[in-house]
Length: 113
Picture 1 (cartoon, rainbow, N blue to C red):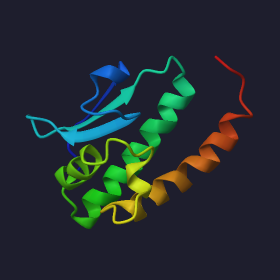
Picture 2: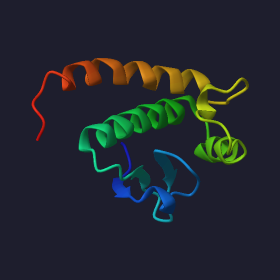
Picture 3: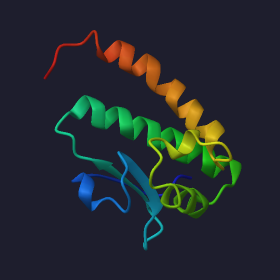
Picture 4: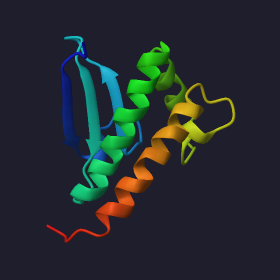
């Protein structure tokens, strides 16, 4: 059974480190996802889709999310820490990137709301 999943859109400067999306297990044991507010719901949902996919795959694999936090926070100058050589979640990050692609293609066909 999945735990409760909490999703928030927050100002980018309130993220734990510079990022479009972040996830961690909060003090209640819930999966917490924080997506940076870009005033673009389509992009924000795309980021959420990526983060959910990546986090779930890592959970299934048994990789502690704190390992991901440590990696990301130790690569503050990287545009994409998940793609860096040696990233402990590179494969899951790349899969999440691939999951986004058909979503974005389809989204482009829809009217703006």
